[in-house]
Length: 290
Image 1: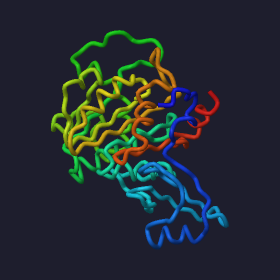
Image 2: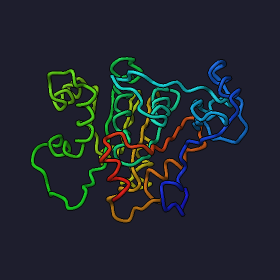
Image 3: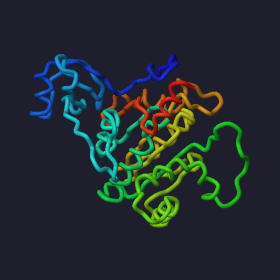
Image 4: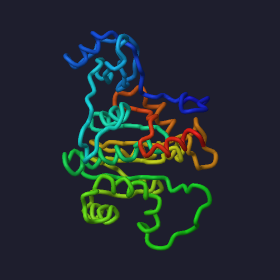
């Protein structure tokens, strides 16, 4: 763990940009591999740019001791990557051999959308996983509204609204609301909403687990979640360390940062820091100015 991390730039990004010869770019596309020098962590992504023509470029992933070409993922639950780093994320999200994917980035960079799209594709279509578990720390932004009425589902639904909003994008062709689609999938046992409070004691095999707003979890809470992952499962952890809403947590001691740093050298893990907003021009401007 980087105890001195004071900004997103000081946390492992999982991505490097390297100038290479045109021949290296050509090899990447013709052979599917590139010969590069350097010491990289497993599943580290490289953006290769020709030293003679910056328009000539490619993406590689360090896998099995080789730099393997990364192709753009198209039509994942109806969406495609909008930028290079989203392409890297989807590459890791769609690879069942990668058990842990962590994605760090500001609001509006597409973390939740692409993760949910990959989960739906591999659970409902490819059937690699039996179900999806959505987790989010119930930490309010600003003043809390107090206790909410209703049963457990009614109490936690407001905290999971980001997932419901993104489900609306992924199932726009449905004549049902995203909430009714969600509850239908929950009735089928394909999706479960799980506050971190209730994770202890669970064992989760063949499950695609998405933990959102992980910057609001402690190191111990994140460890508890990670140790619940069963055989054939995938853990996807998302967050923005500039939006920590919990007292006593900061850039360096939150659960998201600790997980990224702990697993960055492991072959079962991949990490990508997103840096380009895709929600709207205004949302990206707000992130920069405020």
